[in-house]
Image (cartoon, rainbow, N blue to C red):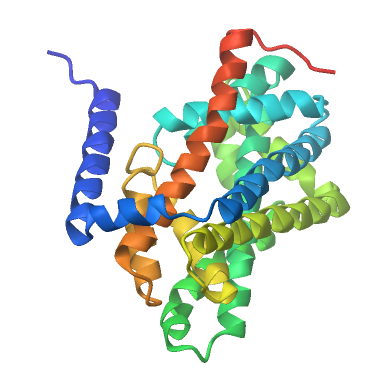
Length: 320
């Protein structure tokens, strides 16, 4: 019998998701969570959903800007369509970033530039990560005197090293001594020039600093909308919590959700909500209800991508 490593990992992730969900619901009263969902304020819930939907073209705009640097020009409607299709497949793939693989694949088919297209998807995710870490740092600085926030300061401080290291390496990639020799040694075995293409596709952005700054600013807007989205989710559950906490906790939850140890972050995400929000005094079943409402929104919006994919099949078309 041949051991299938990929199948084993996927089954392991499904089992972990199921175990975490089971464990979490042993820590709360499920009937309380159901009651909280039944009494949700629809007005605030609709505002939250609207914010999520409005964020899709904003992220697609950023993706379009990254692609343009690579000389790849795709209509905005096409990028929105691919983003939604990626969100649909994200429901079945590991981590909350599984849809990135689908987006990279589809844009590669359109552009016939696999490495350059994939690099834009990776950079878009990385820039988003940098943006949420920036908000987390700002939140800690403003609310450092609050004991709960002070306890999270070290964790946020470690995360803050990510954008710092990234920017130092990004703008000095040709000056860092250990990078060039390693790349040159890899090039000897790289008959298809894949390493060189990856290197070139990333290095090119340092010559477009103004555009990169604009992309980061748009990403900050996008992540701000996500933070405000969760604030309205809390309001829909009749929770009046200082917005400052969301600036710190939502970035941390987003990072935990990216860990490739479960299917679409299921279980891991709920555990993160339970841990972080109960630390600021929220009841456990309310924290889980927040996570469930978020997941319902994600699935609901992603179904649009499923419809798009079903209508056009596997063939990708430009939308002008």
